[in-house]
Image 1: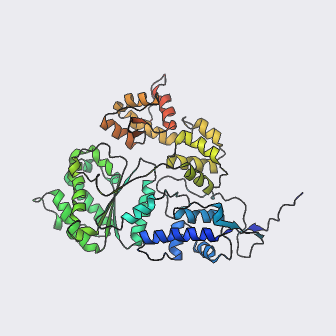
Image 2: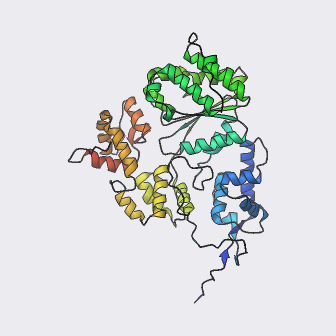
Length: 457
């Protein structure tokens, strides 16, 4: 019978094979060409992008000592690759040096890891790239006068991607102004003049400048033109560099027709100005929204048929498996298929499940059995959706029809917009249907309960 290895001995990971080194170097060179104007990425930049230490990068290239497999996967994933068996070779077991940490055999993140709510920090090892999404976004940002449009339902990682696009912009030396329409008061949204002034002031403060509306605003020329002049004559003149204007939750405007009619055409006009005016070529627009199915705007004035549209996809089975492995779960295809049968590839729902399974005494079977109940881990997001539906009774009838059938349904554009923006439905050429089984089973229970729908608002 074999004796167990002494606890003082540990695995030193793996080194890259010649084939693995060549694959990784080629991927890095592609990124350097597309995103860094052909300049070599430094060791610090490589480490920052992959979410590993600089010493890990040094060990990787030296090939004199091993790198743990989790770090290798992070590095390959950061450049759009999946680590293959032929990419690395395992080292033998050696005694740890005086400065090395003991390997407990548990690669799971420590319990101090925060719950994955909201955008994932740049250094998070749990951000799962969706190639070629990131590379296309980074490359588009370098084009003068570009419009980069990110579209996805809530919980699909739009904010996490925006963080990384803006980090790339900062690396390139661009100025950045950020505007999140979640932060604007309803009274301001309903008043187009006040909204445009709020927009200008928010951009100004984001750039660290003093607002100067009194010097650059004219009631005589009107608020839309004043906004354009303020942006061109004050903000863009002061930053003296390419300016990335990031606008998140843009679709919040759609319910306010006058404000949408005043603001959205400005985005298009600024993009078109870049064709013939050098100063406007310094502007890069980055807009994020949940849906554009219903727009209170003539298509000739809309910014939603300009620039590069990137729809964030659901996770693939391979990406779900990768996230589980990053958390240290010993999963295979069977577990991935079971979870995806309930929630699909919805990034936030997948991530929440894996987090709970990592840190709580909860099995996957238990999670799946309770997922659609008020006692399950999805209680919060499901109740949030229910509260929204309760406040909009016109959604009840189409939702009831969809949860009871598997086929696609034709919807009024306004209803489709409301349901898609919540992520409840997905569209196809045949029509609309419930986006995932979690929602179908939950709403089947609450919409057809014998008693009234519980008031949770």
